[in-house]
Length: 414
Ligand SMILES: Nc1ncnc2c1ncn2[C@@H]1O[C@H](COP(=O)(O)OP(=O)(O)OP(=O)(O)O)[C@@H](O)[C@H]1O
Image (cartoon, rainbow, N blue to C red; front, side):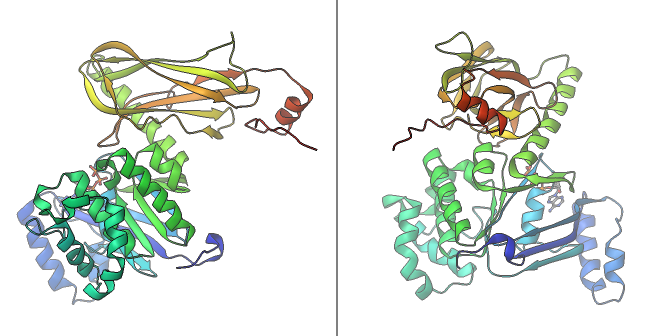
C-alpha cells in the first residue's frame, strides 16, 4: 500500500441497500435456510428473498455507504442494532438477503476473537493457523513473525496453549496477526475493549499509521477515545437501519442523545431507580474567580449510584454554541470506580487554552468493557454552559474575531 489522497481514490468498499434477515425460531430458520439454498437456483428468488416470512425480522436493512483508502468509519448503535451482523456481512461470514457489497482489496477482520484459534496449540502455532485461514502460507508469515511477536507483546506466553490466555491476550494475538498481514480494509468489532489501556493506545497509534498509508478501517466502538482518535466518519444503526451519518464524533453525539433519552425514560418507568445518574457537572477555575483562557480548571462530576460500579470511564466534551466540537478529550483511560450513594469524580485540566467565549459541555460515564453509556448529562437535555473569560487584548480580540477556538502560548522571536 502507498500513501494516498483519500478523496481522489475510488472506494475500497461499496455497500448498497444491504439487508440480512434472521428468524426467531431455530427450527424454522433451518427450514428457511434449506429452502433458500434450493430456491437460489430459481429465477426471481432474490425478489422473494426481500420479503419477511413468519417469525423473521431484519437484522440489518437498506444499509448503504462507501469507504475510501485512508478512511476510518465508526459503526455506532445500541445492543442488537445490527453492528456485528454488518461486519459479518462485510467479512463474508454470512450472506446478505438483499443489496450488494463490492470490495476492492484484501479484508482483515477482528470479529469473533476466539474463532480460528486452536485452544490446545500455543500462541506461536496459532499465528500460522490464523494466517493460513486468511490465505497466507507459512513461508509468507515467517518474515513477518518478529513484528507480530513484538506487537502482541506476549513474551514467553506466546509458547503457552491459547486456552490459558485471558481475553486481552487473545485480542493482542489476533490483532497483531490481522494487522501485520497488511489488509486493505480492517474490520474491528469492539476488540480493543478487552485489551488493557497500553495495548489500546498501541492499537490506536497503529491504526493511525495504517490509515496514513492508505489502509481503511471499519470500527465498531462506542469508546470516545477510539472514535475521536481514529474515525473521521461514522454511521448510527438503530434496529438494523442506518439512521445517521456524520463525523465519528457527531455520530457518537447522536447516539448518546438517543441513549440519554432511553435512560431518562427507563428511569421514569422504574420510579427514578436508574443504576447511575449524573446530577451535576461543574467547571471551576483553580486559581481565579472565573475560568480564564489558558487557566487551570477543575472538573467535578456529581453522580448518584444505586450499586457500586467498577471499571467505568468518564469523558466530557466541549462544544461551541453553534455545534462545533472543540474539546473531545477528558476521557480517563484508567478505570474509575463508582461507590453507591452520592459522590464525586473529578479531574484537573492544567491549561484550558480556549479563547474567550461561551461554550457548552456534555458528559458521559460509560462501562469500559461494553463501552455502553451508564449515565449521560447534556446530550438530550440542556448542555452545561461554560464561560471562558480573559483580558480582551488586541491579540485576543483578533482571535475571537476570526473565531479561533484555542490560544497558543507563542513567543515571537526576531
Ligand atoms: N444468527 C442469528 N440468528 C437470529 N438472530 C440473530 C442472529 N445474529 C444476530 N441476530 C439478531 O440480529 C440483531 C442484530 O444483532 P447484532 O449482533 O448484529 O447486534 P449488535 O449491534 O452487534 O449488538 P451488540 O452490541 O449487543 O453486539 C439482534 O436482534 C440479534 O439478536
